[in-house]
Every structure is written in structure tokens, then in C-alpha cells.
Length: 245
Image (cartoon, rainbow, N blue to C red):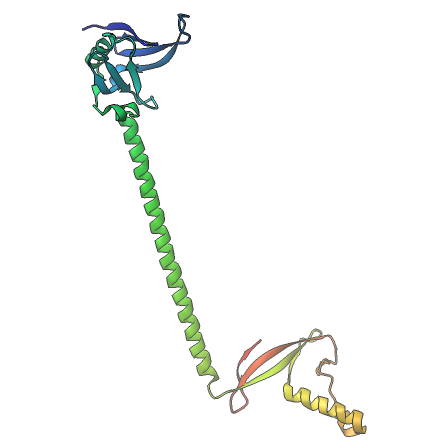
């Protein structure tokens, strides 16, 4: 078996030593200077197209090549391509025949496998993400249903609790000195206003004695008070069964 080969095709020189291939490319025509274009192990090579006629040509690719390499001399057909092909096949290169146009853009089968694996992993990731979103939508829908049910049950309980009761709107006063709380109804406010008007109109002493300062604490006499509106529900016995602030 031949263990060395050195052939030039077009502007590339192919140097084979054992199972190693080095491709040199001429930097300037006629200068004799070269640079290493590529190095690889021959067993990594896949020959994706080979045509042996008056103008032989060959495409081959390795895992490190972004796309296939063309070995072709259009202007000066040479037997060296056939020699290179035979050397590569005899030293571990494999054939993966493709059409000429497919071969020109071909990638190594290992590269294709990695790309397919990445695509499959991406599909699985998207599927898992989609499933998580679906589960989240289900959980959110279940939570909303529970909230609606809870609100409905509270409304039913509230309706039952308020059944037969009278709704009263009052003002709650709180003393900041002694913490005493007292309530003033709308009727109390109306009566106090009537007494005030009676005093102004008639000078009634009786009405004057009935006037009240709701902002003054009846427990300690302090005017350091605050107020807020509240709703009360009272039963027929005037017992407060519920309230809202």
C-alpha cells in the first residue's frame, strides 16, 4: 500500500503521509509560496462526490470544515484527482455519495448529527416550555375559579347574615387621648342641625342645651379625635350583627 502522495491540482497541493492529509494553497501565482489551508486525519474524510471522466472532480468534507472542499482543475484536467481519490479510500476515507449541487454545500455526517441533536433538544425544550405554560394557565384558571367560588360563598354568607337586618350608615369617632369610640347616626346629625337652627332663629334655650359637639370625646372631653364612615347591620332587637368600615 502506498503511504505517501504529493499531488497538485489547480492552486492546491495535497500532501498525504500515512493517514494524514495536509492541503496547501498557493498564496500568489508564480511566487512558489504556500500556506496550509487544512490538515486532517484521512479517516475523518467523507467523499460526497466523485466524477472520473475527462475532467475529474471530487468533493470531500471533514467535521471541521464549514462546507465541502472541491478538488477540480477545469482548464488542465489531470489524473492526480484519481490518484488522490484512491489514496484517500485506501487509507480510511468513506464515501457518502450526493448529487453535485448537494455535495457543493455538504456538511460532515457528524456535523449534521450534532445539528439534528441541537434541533431535537430545542424542540424538546420548547415542548417542555409549552407544557409548563399550559399547566400554568390551568393553575391560574383553577385559582380564578376558586376565587370566584370563595367570593360567591362569602356573598351568600353575607346575605344570610344580613337577612332581616336593617342597614345603618353612621360615623365612628375615636378619641386619641383615651381611645374611646362612639357612633353618631345621620338622625343625630339632623337633630343637632335642627336644634342649631332653632337657637339661631328663636334663641331657644332648650335647643341650646341639646346642642352637641360630636368632635369632643364624651368620655374625657378631648377634641383630639378622628372620624370615619361605617355601615352597620342591626337586627330587630337593635343588636349589631355586622359592620363595614
